Length: 113
Length: 110
Image (cartoon, rainbow over all chains, first blue to last red; front, top):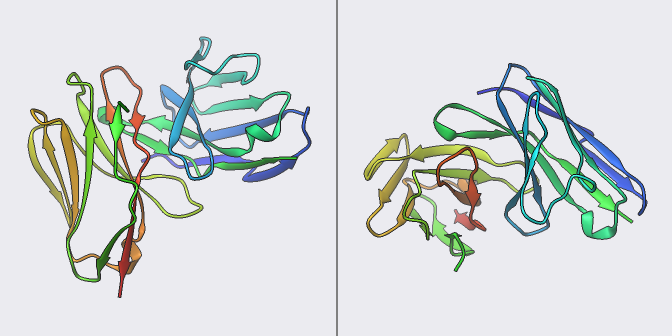
């Protein structure tokens, strides 16, 4: 499976600010995904990031709040905009493997004060 | 009704026993099924996937799928304390997305 890295691994931010999370893969992948995992909860898909096209957002998530870039087949960014304490969560990127599998990066732990 | 349901646990088993983790799903059109292990503070790690009815074995792990009854299970033989983690069931309904359950916390005690 691909080696996936995320930056930053964790951050503490003030409300009203924005944070951009980077996801880097060591091989070219078609599909990348961004998830949120709130404390004690399961994974919620934010959006699917396709290279060369706009991200596809899930219900409840909008581009103004979570803009995503996918400039090439090995990299994507997720920005959490105008943050509030409710955005405190773990943000995970994943990449699609064969047979619908997904492999996850190590995650970014975000605390908004 | 949630799309993917799991008992949150904790499921406590003694070392060496078989741990049985269950998952039910609501969409009969679901096509493939995945088990992830997530240690506390870590990201999910794919253990197994299955898409045909029956059993699929990989080392100490066996995934079982029954599409008629809409459940998928994961058996862990010879459970070890290092197996203590949250196990997430995920379902693909077609397309590229996975729908995750809330996970079952497994505790293996010595």
